Length: 401
DNA sequence: TCTGGGGTCCTAGGACCC
DNA sequence: TCTGGGGTCCTAGGACCC
Image (tube, chains in turn green, brown, cyan):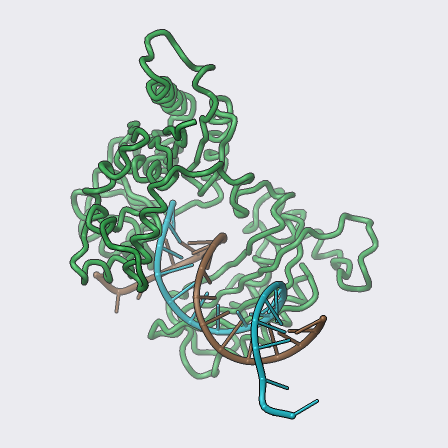
């Protein structure tokens, strides 16, 4: 069977902005920047199409964005809010396609292989036409049912579908028929290829390679540029079946026993005092272990991250017996912090990561020895309140500073 | 462009084991 | 004893993605 363009990549347009507009209709039709209030330290996480021509883009500091777009409305990011909207989108996609995978909060891959017959109509002149028409109908259904605009790329290869979804924005559909991959990708800047970031781009541009059409011609061989060319050629080939499951971070809570969990914080003013650094560490441990318990898992590895004023960054980690107890993690994190911080330099950022996750033994099941000490009753009560009303419903004395 | 916060994946050296 | 090769785990750092 010849490979065909059956992989669709659906990307929600300016997702956070779109959700904020659903929740606050006064934002409709006005330029919007999501990421924080004017003057906050932080960066743009999403911005509306009105401000793009002014030079605003995600990742830019809010100060710069405010200078470029003085008229824009600035709204803080509400991470707890967006997941439910993404879940509604996914539920609709599953009515249209048997294979739907979540790649990120605003991005889904679908595999329509084998669906041509079911969706075929007399006016369709080919299987490709059937799929493209179906995807257009699906895209419109998402918009009508959720109020969220989306763009879709369709191709035989995931990476090509992804690049095509970029070309489909806003609110469009672009299909790249099998065999047309090189013609489609050739004119695009190298940065558009998934896997080419700022560092790789710099290397390529320094070598005079600006487009994927130039990169694809680089011969096989050793060295970073030949490696990137090989990566590109591989990316243009038809993809195999999509992975069995969603990425770990986007699975349901009770099956999320893989991947890692982390919380980190950049301080408005870098911290120099030891007691404040320790308080911050405690607060991070409290939050990240709560998330771990909520998804019913344990972690074997704890890593502390520290960034100084000059942006130099260090991590120190250690593995041990699995735990989800705040006390255990705090003890380990504190000792790692002592190894990572000289106690003199000012600390700009502190982070705690939990990794090597696995599912915690079910309730009532005898754990081997005291690896899973019963949670103190106060801790259980705090978790319960947070489960109902959200993490911020309870601020513990020292952590609320 | 003075740079947030949540992730994944890859590399590379050393320990350790058979 | 001076010494092979493969596999896996641990740790630190970095590129990349949204």
